[in-house]
Length: 193
Image 1 (cartoon, rainbow, N blue to C red):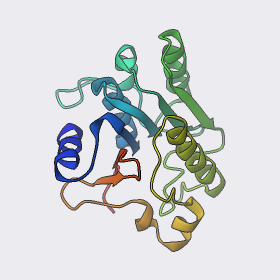
Image 2 (cartoon, helix red, strand yellow):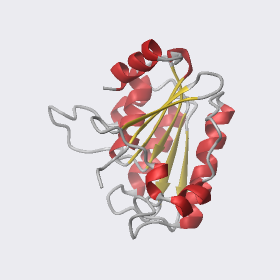
Image 3 (cartoon, rainbow, N blue to C red):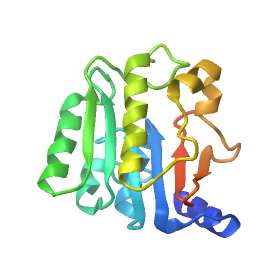
Image 4 (cartoon, helix red, strand yellow):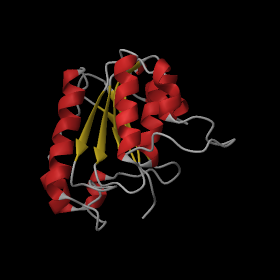
C-alpha cells in the first residue's frame, strides 16, 4: 500500500508527503497512473509501460483510462511503440484523454521499443531507448521539483549491476528514496527475479 509506505517514510524518517513522487514499471506503471488519481498530494509521477486499459476485476476495479478525470499530478508516461501487451491505440487514447481533460501529463513513445525496454536483464532491453527514457524521467522529476539524490546515471547502473537500478524491499518491493530537499520517491518493481 503506497499510502502506508509514504506515511511510514514520513513518520520514520525525514520524508515529507507534500513532496511525494512515484515511478513504476509495467504493473507499477499502471499503479503510478492510478496513484496519481488517488493521492492529491502527489508532486509528480513517471509511468514506465503501464497498462492503460483492461478487464476490471474485484482486485483491479479501475485502469488509468478510467481515472483520467482524477489525475491532478503531472505524470510522464513512457511507452514502447512495439509493445505487444499495450496497444499503441490505448497509448494514444490515454494521450487524447489527458489532453481533453486539460491534465498536465505527457506521454513519450519510443517507436522501436517493446515492453520492458528499461529492463536490462530481459531480451526486450533497448539501451538507447532506456537511456533516453531514464533521462526524460530525471528531467521530468527535476521540472516538477523532485530532485533524486545523486541522480544516478543509467549507463553506470546498467554496467554495474541491474540490481542497483531495481532495489527491492523483501516484503513489498518498494524503494523509498529521500532526496536532499526531503522529496520522497516511491518506486514499485513489477516482478520478482
